[in-house]
Image (tube, rainbow, N blue to C red; front, side, top):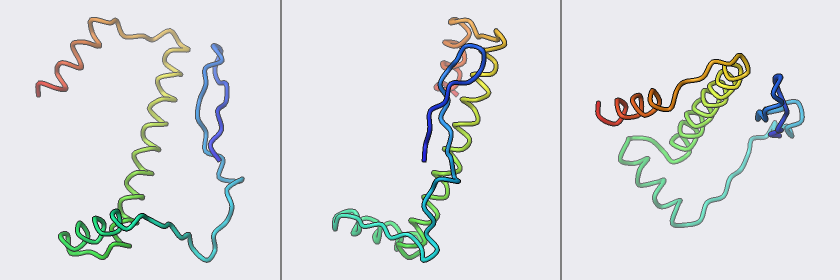
Length: 102
């Protein structure tokens, strides 16, 4: 389950995945998609030389990795903010501009 906890001196909210409370699925998990989504999954999988199940597994795995990196980045940001480490607005604008113009 995803929990919101207050962390740091400022009592900021942080999202934490509590894997101890997740229900076990020793037989696997079943996910149902609407027919139009299944059709698209099969088309994309076929175009990439995979079956739909493999495509879904790989996609979910990437999404979970991205989510873990995002949550870790949020935690680093909260820690930096708690330590008084901030970036000025003009610097943020400059960095965003560099991201979109590179």
